[in-house]
Image (cartoon, rainbow, N blue to C red; front, side, top):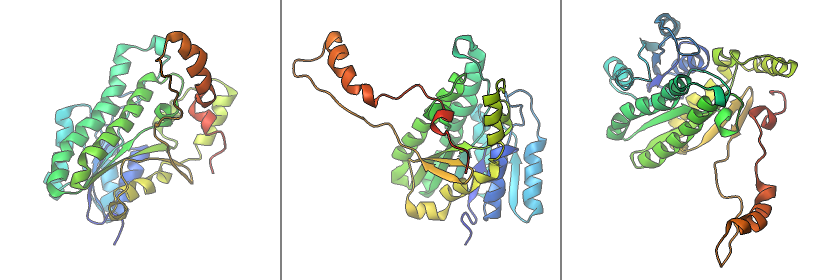
Length: 305
């Protein structure tokens, strides 16, 4: 049996890049796929129905089963229609891959409210809307899985991406909450932090030799490298393994399991704390355990393998 044989999987943002890779490999492993893509630009502007339909034609041309949907995940009614497309076309829904996203980068003190809300709406609200629409069906059938896209921009940090970073770290919390709340119904939820060249990564400014070198390295990492992890997380095998509440990274041929926030060190004072005592005792005790102000490139400083 193929990894996701006969499962009905919704993939958002599946018209291009990483999402397209997800949809194609899901279908190759026997899934029936709802290919959702609004067809907007990297910044979320415009609309184009052709990318989703082109992926569907590729899948069906190869003997797979797929249908297109072009609703926006940032609209709760649109998100509900995406799930309804799976039900109307295939009679059920077994998995949701929350991949749709946009970028509107800018330094924090210059970020507009519009750019803040637009990115949060697609990434965080969109992941919630789709997941919430699918949850009653998963609960009723006592099975289902969510795969959410997070990012080291949120998990580690990045410059000029306050909106994106906040959304992606919020998605981590959303995924963990879903995993905890729906475990009793045998529903799983996990995150992937992908490293891959895509339209969104292609919008990174290359205004220095270091930035240009970094982008050239990123170009080695194709979206297809991310897809096997998503297929596994939606698979019968992941059900058996009961993999839930985890954060995985995929970087070319490397797979990472990310840590999750836990206390590093504690200090205690019987008489309680004053601001002065915190400065004199607590902070010096914590100092060696504090995280430096790093960005993703500092943590993942070696070339992709």
